[in-house]
Every structure is written in C-alpha cells, then in structure tokens.
Image 1 (tube, rainbow, N blue to C red):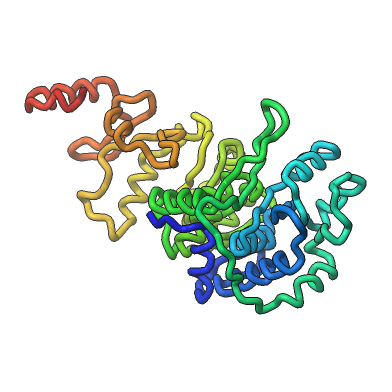
Image 2: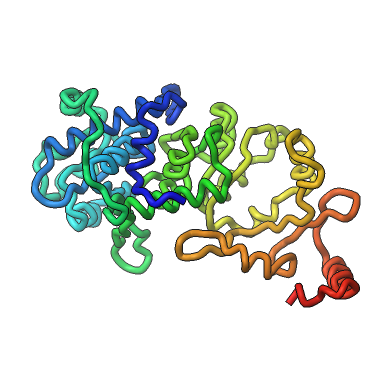
Length: 374
C-alpha cells in the first residue's frame, strides 16, 4: 500500500499509451487522458476566483466527468458531484452549500440551473456541448501538469448522501482516502493491466468512484463508460468492449438479473462483479455447475487450486479502512448464515447440508483438532 495522494496515480500514467477510457465509439489512451486533465487543470488555475477551488460537476457518465476529476486532483481542487435528480431550490442549496465557484454541465442538464440563485455569473457555468466550452479550454491545450502542492489530507471529492434522514450532506473524501481505497479494491478484486471495467453507476456516487473509476486507474486498466445505466444494454456492452470487471449497487444488479434469461447469457468475458446491497435472490442465483465449468476452462488453474468450499455472500465484513476482515471470515468458516457449497472428495460442487457440517466436526474431533472450530 503506497501512502500517496490520488494525484500521484494520474501523473504516473502521463506517458502511458495503454487504453484508459472508452466511451461509445471513442477511445483515449492514458497519455491523452492525462493531457485532457492537465488542460482543464490549467484552466482552473488561470481562472480561479477567491475562495475554495470547488468545481460542481453536473454531468452524466461522459468523458468530461473523469477529465474534471483528474483536473481537480492535479490542481489541488475539489470536485462536487451534483445529483441531477435534485430540482429547484434543493439543487440550488446543494451548489451554494458546497461553495462551487464553477459549474460544469451539459445540454441535457443545463435547463435544471435556469432561474436558480447560485451566486455565480453566467460565464462560470460551462456547457461541455457548447462551442464556448471548447473555446475556453483551447488556450490551455498542451499545458504541463501543474506544480501544485497536494497532501494526503487535502479534500478532493464532496459527494452527497442520499438525504433519507434530512437534507443531503456533502461527505468529504481526501486525496489520500481515495488513493488508499482504490489500492484496496485493486488488491481485493485482483485488478490489473488487463482489467476492462464496465462503469455505469453514476459518477456523482461514491460506489462508482471508489470501486470503479479509482481502482481502474490505479491498476492501469481500461474504463468503459456508459452515459446512463441500461439493464438490457449491460450484457451487450460487456461483450462489445470485452469487460471483465463490473462494479454495482443492489438495485441495478437486480434489474440486470431480471432480464429474460437466454441460453447464451454465460457467454461473456465478465470475471468479477463487486459492490454492495445485492438482494438475497440475486446471490442465490449462483450456479455451482456453471462455476465448475468456468474453473475447468482455466488452463492456468491447477487442480489443487480449485476451491473446495464456496460461500455466497451479499457483502463482506470490512474494517473502517475498507479492508476485508479475514479473521471473522475464518472464524465463521462454513458455519455461517449464508449458503455454502462444497466439493466432496470426488465430484462437483454441491450445497453444504447440516449432515455435512456434522460430519466435518466429527473428522476434526477424530484428529484431536476440535478446538480449531471454537
């Protein structure tokens, strides 16, 4: 684990020609992505006003969203993720409450700001679809990465809560926190250079940034953005772009799994899906036969590496620093409140039954190791 601000990971990719981002039929290398971030960082520093350098981003999942996050990371600024489902006075409150001195939006969301008292002049609202936007950024094309002093503790993101218990609160995420969380997810999910990450969760939400955008960049993999989530479009997208990693929250996953079943559903490159709040029904759809077939196709997986016990879980116990609590998982073993599958001495995976658990305990007792189960 490297104790470095998130800015470090962006700068590290400045000369990298590996694909960093794909959106619809366009693609950006890491070199191009960092250049886009540096251009916007130069604009921020050249045009900043007095007060905190807070940039409100009101965009769908389009390339400019990660470009502006990267710009803030490089310039020592802060991105405020603005939720487009908010309206009127509530939306104005979110923007004013977080001291945004610049708003970046697009044509489909620009009308949401009309008539609102934001405390900003018109020129401080940028529409990425307008000619004036390109004109504003043009003087800063080819800008060098700014020599900004950025610490681990410096705020990088302000992300609003859902507001279920009152007005949404802007949760602070520092450069260091996002860096450490991203590195943790890389290690937990085995992300690497060949990771192609399908990112459809909204980028103003912590799930998208903490389990998708950040970890993919730290791993040096490729992010695939979709403007809006589509349950019916998920599997075709995953096949089209070759995505092998997907981050989610519960409801979108349920919508995907609720799609009509097809015979070729398993014909896709997806290897890992990571998220939270999955419904019990979705977890129960685990098919041990399909999993066995998948393992058999892995030519680099030795016979002794194939798991004998498989526990399906809606979520993993984690510490306050987002590390998996392995000690708790080891203590619970197969005697937990979730479904566990096991592989007999010979044969396929099958559900672990109470009689199987009793037999395991007898075997431990026969070998004088029953204390290991306490």
